[in-house]
Length: 347
Ligand code: MRU
Image (cartoon, rainbow, N blue to C red; front, side, top):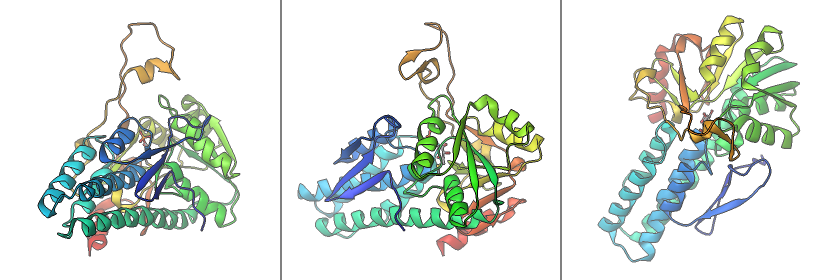
């Protein structure tokens, strides 16, 4: 399957599609060390939980390659890999895929520096490929929930751009299209960073999948008018009781779906589940620069000097989630079996 990915790995260099410039410009940047990768995650050149995880894995691999080039031996190489993982872990706090991927990369490496670096690069490629495979499996599992002729409302971008490729919520859309179902997508614009308008609309339009952009404030009214069949969103972290952290505004969409009796589905790989998090109240919520709210594309839309708050994520309580679509199939409430799902994954 030919899958579009927001990252590329060629000759020991990480290439990232600069998502801040979409949809007007398709520019790729090159990262040659862990500092550049950490900066790309922090400034949202790359974003979306699984994509952040894959990118961070390459950041660790780049640190190992640079260390091996400078002749660093086994213990020194391990020290530099650990330091790189610490640096990358500090880039963004909410998406647990970042910490999951770094844990995968921290596992012991060979003593021979050259071999160790190659081993870590291969591990990062493996994490990336595996993420695409997980998304395709999520798409197949989720397609069964989507009726022919459905209008799917989504929030933010949980598509190819947010993953190794193919997408989670948009993976379900792609899975339904591949199952020959007619679907169309209502994409919330997703203020303040506009991932829906800039990214979801871009990638669905590029793939010839019908997408209609709506203002965030229009979502509940679309539901009231009977124009929504179901909601499918991604996740940044899922707690063991089924509470879901995702882009700010998701909680409001879930409340509206509940009020209108519409299914609210969360699509996510098991790398988004946090075994150390009992409930959503424990999930760290990133607070971003208030200027993202006060400005759009650099233009002020609020009076100079006015205060603003910019929580980047919210938590949707498990009671509003109709099902979680994973690469292992569809999990329905009560979500008591989530931990078992992860135990099986590790075995
Ligand atoms: O701030 P972002 O753009 O990284 O937030 C992304 C989201 O909230 C996505 O919905 C989530 O990461 C799932 S991506 C498959």
